[in-house]
Length: 402
Ligand SMILES: NC(=O)c1ccc[n+]([C@@H]2O[C@H](COP(=O)([O-])OP(=O)(O)OC[C@H]3O[C@@H](n4cnc5c(N)ncnc54)[C@H](O)[C@@H]3O)[C@@H](O)[C@H]2O)c1
Image (cartoon, rainbow, N blue to C red; front, side, top):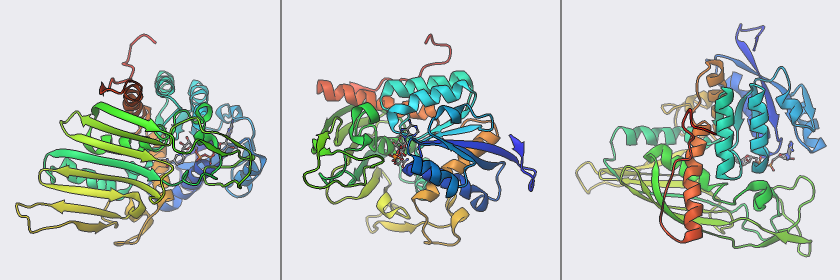
């Protein structure tokens, strides 16, 4: 850390690996921290960025103000001025970068789900812990101000005892058969399909709001088995043309699950990337003996609440986002002035920077990432066996032989 010349505030060097959608979103997030979070213990400095695509490296320097860019990610984890490494590459590259960064004493923020398989997430958590570095995982939907409010309502007992939970993440990013065969559709680059990609968000939110999941039954399937091959840099939002050469999708489009939670409640989950209709429906409905709460990312700035209040003469009430809820006022004052997706990324980047500056753990860190893949591991076993299975925590206890 060096001191900021203007504010006598420490400056923390940031290195970003993978400059696609999320690499750019986090880079903007760090750049925006000083103007949105006046009360901050440190300032970020965009030191070095890595991507295999030359145009993206040029954009990182020219458009985002990185001091340098490289085609070799090792230059980022080896850079003496980098204290935090942000990992936003395809999933199957996460683990080797986490291990190299942690071995060099860098704090690591990795996009969800940290690795492409449960075993990789477990290994990443171990690497960070053994190196004594702070870890963070990109479960950004936890930071939605109204999701934080929902958690406060639940924790205060205002909807009574939770009986059942419905979680879903229904996206249309893969609903067009002409959508390119980008890395997300390939097991060797993404790991598993939606169970790794968007079910992870849905189940992380469920465990944040309703506690651990204890047993599951699950099923996955693929609806679109062939897709046009991409040219360099194509993403899951890009389209091919009829007649383009195609390749085979090697992971699942859809995953469904029934779960039991440790608190005695039950849940259902559905994640799909190739549905026609829903667009980015990361949503939950949580029902208790005294009320219920529903939220849908498609209307991120609205929460529906229902309080029975001992009478049936009631109904759902819409609560709009506003500066009385956590973080919202950092972006806009008043009520019903909306915030957006990248504001969530700025919040998590700010919270991670704060944790590093204060040398304390960040939540959700890699331990919470392991909590999701423990459930995913059970879901995959259930899919294979067709049976209910117990969730076995994959967290490696301190002092256990490795
Ligand atoms: N939290 C969220 O809401 C959210 C949303 C989207 C993606 N993600 C996660 O973010 C990660 C990246 O997803 P994305 O949508 O940004 O992907 P993307 O395809 O847009 O970007 C990935 C980038 O990594 C680069 N890359 C590939 N190999 C590389 C290497 N060896 N060295 C350096 N760069 C390399 C690619 O060129 C590309 O620019 C994934 O783990 C994904 O699960 C999270």
